[in-house]
Length: 369
Ligand code: GAF
Image (tube, rainbow, N blue to C red; front, top):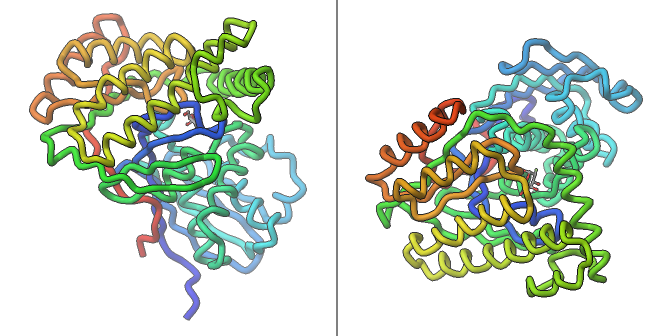
């Protein structure tokens, strides 16, 4: 019998390295979190679309016809992600006859851990299994990215959607965002008595959409002035010297050096080298985001400095920045001490105490039942 209902799961992510490279045709290296979105979906035949979220106060009731014609400003911001996915399925010729969606997330919102991709990807997977089983993972990434870009209005790349849909347990996802080529790289911290600590500073990203879009525009301008399709095509940081504008020089240098850091870390981990060796490269990534790309924030810098002072092998902000979370690579038996030091450093400066937890590379999106 054809399935008309079920539950689907999509995870949040941390990006180990490769920040603000995805909209420059560059490389990224994320892993899926054990935190994510559960989407309970039930097909209906009457064109109605009903969304309920345990994290939002009001239910959203609309129809597939209204989604094709309505102004989207009437819909609450969070709902534009699932509604955008539904609209995008229909616009591409995959009919959605109607759907009830019940959503429940364990990914903290605004923490830089990609709660929005967990939302859109869990819904996209449900719609695929219920109504369009031949859709490929590549098309699902394109649909969910379009939902975020066009309907939610955030001009992201494909990092978060790819991580949610393609990550596998025990691995980092090495993704070339230009070609969409992927490789699963084993990341076994346990074998080296290491932990990856996530320190959610609880300081929500502010003005992220405007600043994010500005960074994207600056990178495009730098590429155009350097005469290349994207900054991915510039292999050596010294080439930024050809840019007359110092701000664009800094932006371009971050992207070029960050791509090199992803390649360097991927190479080390492919060889099964001790991951402690990648620590300084992670920290260099943070310095580049702080000084050249200027997307860090005082709580993130405080957390990174305190983690390093307490013995972390490397630490950096993860995600878009401007607030959110830091990751720190620590000896397993130092995780508690590093967390305490970061907490003390943040609260001493009047920032909220962080939420801290360790993560292992977890499963990508899948059907639960
Ligand atoms: C956000 C975006 F959604 C991603 O596409 C990526 O650009 C990231 O910021 C920065 O690396 O998560």
